[in-house]
Amino acid sequence: MESNLRSAPLSKPLLWVGWILSVLPVLMVVVSAVMKFVKTPELIEGFAHLGLDLRLAVGLGVLELACTILYLIPRTAVLGAILLTGYLGGAIATHLRVGDPFFPPILPGVLLWGGLYVRDTRLRALLPLRR
Picture 1: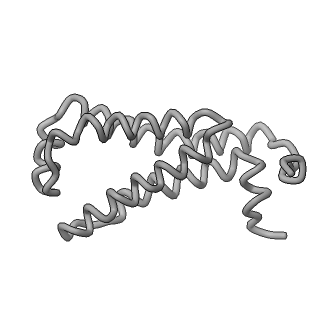
Picture 2: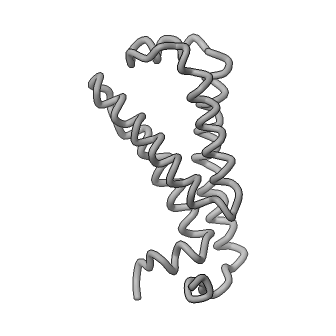
């Protein structure tokens, strides 16, 4: 079945666009994870505002990095994208709960799926935008 999901190879410019779109959300998530390890004053204030226990910070940072690593490995990129989408969904729910804008966690999710869609021919074969 996998051979049925393969399409024409990507052009180099298209592959570059896919990786650039993929790196942007990766940088956002990595910065977020590092903040959780360093426990910056902004993070401490943000956790208090969201009603989160600061003891969760390191675990959430590890989770972010693990999902991101899976996303960066081509063979596990779809799994990483699914896990990051779930993580970002939790962030959206947390922000909604306290009345904050919920769109900031949506941007990395859109970018990570957009980048993966552009750079992974198997995903484009599964989810064609046109026939």
